[in-house]
Each structure stands twice: as structure tokens, then as C-alpha cells.
Length: 136
Image (cartoon, rainbow, N blue to C red):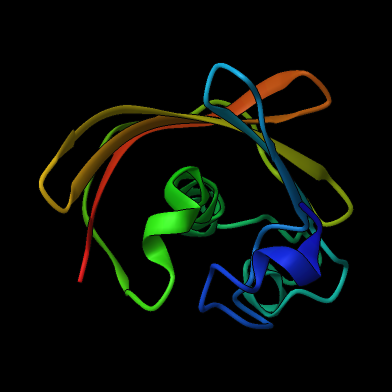
């Protein structure tokens, strides 16, 4: 699914749409990609002369990828994150990097969804965590 198609499911728009493409495989695992642009607003002051993608943005990239795991259920609803647990940051993410996310739905209870996700750059694990969200 490319950026135009995924906008049918996610309510996010630039500059907060942080998935460029996604594929959900036969095992239900999402494989998403996002190329960090050189002029991203969140890198301009974080840090001048040494831009680094903030951890909260890395979590948002993973969160949007997780939401697309239930793409048919999110149409017309708002995804509200209820928890981001066990998050670890292992390597820096910089402008120009291609973020590759893998995300898996672990459980569903009513309108609550529980996922695990990892974000890699050049095969290196940069961020991982457990994310939960509700559809309202």
C-alpha cells in the first residue's frame, strides 16, 4: 500500500503522516517504511547542526504502522494510544535514514488493540516497544 492508499485509512496528513508505504504479510505482520526527510520540522531544533529524530517521533512512526494492522476497522474512527510500554532506544535515527518498521498485533479486547513493534535503520534496531490503542 503506497502513501495515497494508506491515507484512506489514517487520518494523519503532512507533516504528521509518518508512513510512506506498508505491506501486511500472510502472517499479519506489518512491514512499513518511512524515509526521514532532511527538512523535517521535528529535526530543525533537535538539534541544530546535529539533527536527530526524537524518540517520541520514532514511537509515532511505529504507532501509525500498528494502526494499519487493523486498517479496515479504523475507517471513520480515531486511534487513541493508551500505552507505550517497554520502549527502548538502541541507535540514533537521522535525516535521510530509511526507517523500516515491523509491527504485530498481539491481542484485541473490545475496541482495544495491543501490538509490538520494532524500528530498524540499515538492519540496526533503533527502537522497539509495546503499543496499545483504542478505536473511538
